[in-house]
Image 1 (cartoon, rainbow, N blue to C red):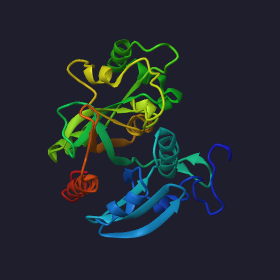
Image 2 (cartoon, rainbow, N blue to C red):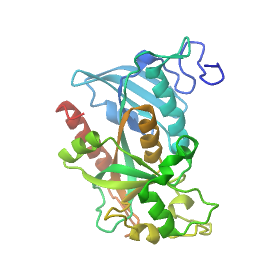
Image 3 (cartoon, one colour):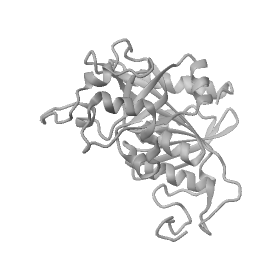
Length: 289
């Protein structure tokens, strides 16, 4: 593999993350906000390694005597593309020779994020695990266009009557065993839509005009085989898609801080996020993950 394709720093660390394989555990919790990394790692038994480069912050230590890392990805699937490819390389490629390892290490990813619900029956400050994700961004079109062929998104595309100039949405799935473990912790399931931005792509307009050929109510009303889109984010579809292709397990858990149908926002967002983190930490301690 050429140096221009897999770039390493002078200290042998991978280019954007700035870490080497020994700095990361194969159980990885991801958050968007670098400030949230310490909020998660405070529950570790101890933290052995701390590093930050750009918006990517990582803490690695142990939890219930198990090696674990928490890393910030920043916002959007463009960041997910960088972070997940480089994390995969740490466990699958010899960074010195740039050759694939004979026995790559599978990774378990658990995203702990925030989200806005779009359905009227989803309460503020609830927690949802996404069993699948619909990508309205275009990341996975560069990797596996077949993800556009899933019946859920072909039906959605027909429902929204999108013109050809709009990218066809794609469909990526969580690891079902991880979803089951989340439901055992009392977390409800849903299907998340991943957008390429927070404002216009999610139907918010402060001083700009709405130009999408569909309204958010069209997404709220959509159903396919009794399944519906329940909430929005900016990362999950890319996480699921890349994890599927690379042979890793991934699940995305979201604290619901807004309800777009009702136009409401949580009065206690920090407490809700902390409750989500504690629930996941308790699950790890009990051997669920």
